Image 1 (cartoon, rainbow, N blue to C red):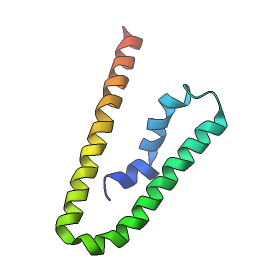
Image 2: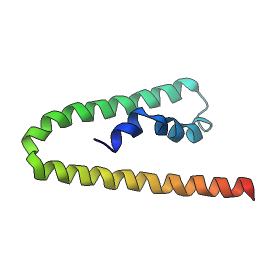
Image 3: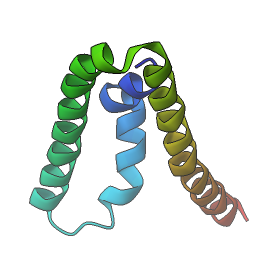
Length: 91
């Protein structure tokens, strides 16, 4: 999972959380939401290692393409929101 792993574990995770941290009033809710998202990703990665043996190459490539499509669908609105916020602050 070369695309998803840096997003789950790297600095881009902090960059994704920072704009939403201001919108959440409770620190506990923020921590729980981050933990639950991390736990869901962990479960998916563990299940996928076992599922990879069943799906073989074609199934694995199909799931990778679907994952990439989902990441793009999530990234585009975030990029638009960030660009709009940046333009509002400088203008």
